[in-house]
Image 1: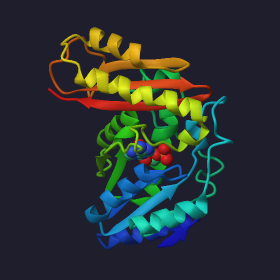
Image 2 (image 1 turned 180 degrees about the vertical axis):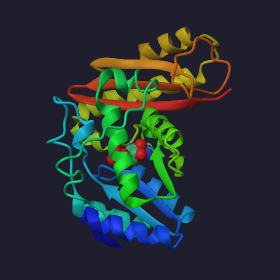
Image 3 (image 1 turned 60 degrees about the vertical axis):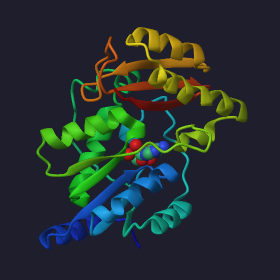
Image 4 (image 1 turned 120 degrees about the vertical axis):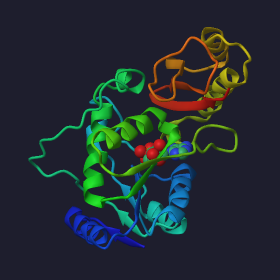
Length: 273
Ligand code: AMP
């Protein structure tokens, strides 16, 4: 595995691959990698000839009061995990944007609710960084985890709307042994909060496993189970538009974000017919 820090080197290499018709797979991350990330890398391996993983903590997607400066980092550990998972090129730029960067990519509609409502500048930051990374890496296929379900739908829309010619593939949400969705932010949790946080996936499973056709009833059931300091949202939505539904009679998604102290945890589950 090669590690590249320079934006120009990454871009030149990628343009060379494109000229030679190579199939390039891409898994963008913010580092502090866990089994959720390495699962995406392993699943991407057989889908491409060259596999690029990026690690960049993107300031554009953090709000002014969020955890940008204390976001956990472990570049040496991450490099070992990437290599073991089958990565060819680890792209770790120190800075990603030119000083006179002027462009913002804004996906409308599906960004107005949920994470978009709680973090108003977040998805423009995500879409902008992913768009720039796509330009630098020139992937054929990119994978995003269903852990961040709204992010996946936003980036899929972006790639389609802008005719980027990049296949956007969902990766499965990977959980810890006790069901907690793996997240780099789980390290912030105290032992007590981590134990309380198990109620988040349990609440979503209760929604999934209920037989009630009423979304309202299922959500009420889940609210009773959820133990946290604040529920940012807990709802049942259409898997494509992310609009809330009233009737549970087709494949849907239950989504939730809950706060434990200063830490926000996201989770979601598919609801089958
Ligand atoms: P992050 O480093 O948190 O920005 O995440 C980078 C990529 O890994 C995104 O596509 C996430 O959705 C994905 N990811 C993060 N946590 C998980 C998880 N527990 N299971 C699957 N994918 C994940």
